Length: 304
Image 1 (cartoon, rainbow, N blue to C red):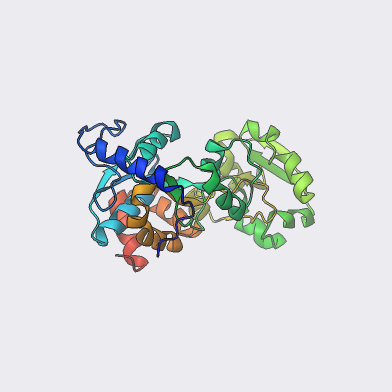
Image 2 (cartoon, rainbow, N blue to C red):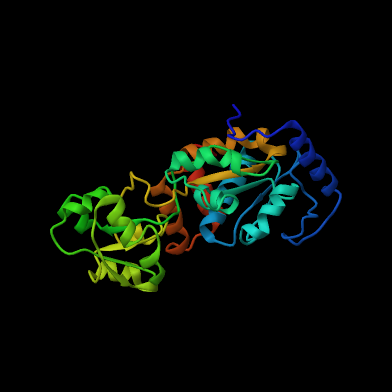
């Protein structure tokens, strides 16, 4: 069943399809060239893109292999770069499907958004996206800012959420990049949102190392960081939305939405926060290829 959240007007859809067909006659080996020989034409080849980021490429490869398993012809255009490079390709139909992150995607189109929770962000995306682009079902997997502690610290103080930090009876020191001190979700945000008072240490690139060593007892860590698994860390839940939620969500050109929705939504339903961390561990620690990681994940989740 087609469950894409955004449905723009038929005129916008037709316009994208026409643009995609026009591009189909051009050929280029450059993934940044919107004249790629494959295009986001309904019923034809689906071009799957990715950022130049190993975790994003793994998800894109999962999308690609899942579609191929369903009989769809796929072309890969990985390592394209950041949003300024690939959003135009999605809009003109040169790329049909891309793994995105809901909060960051929303802020790209709506910088002053007040949405914070996963539900709020996802609900805001349809109106924020330009005509011709849609999002399919988001996953529970995230790659966003978090406040993270060691498992030993979480167990000792029975910590599950950021709010639980208020009951800790030892001084709290937050570690992170220097700019975190002034960010709205930094020490000031912790106090105003959760009533938690912390000191701050600009730990920079050694944030996780300092957390493990006990130099700080809370750290600002991205939720898909493989060290969450390898260093036995615990991400504290954020029920009040201190951080802008950024769930993994597929963004598609409208011309291929109906063609890929069922397959990709099934992938999103299986992709969890812990699962995404494990995928990243397989890449960074086990040094497996994106193709091998994707193949194993699809088999483990009954999607191959």
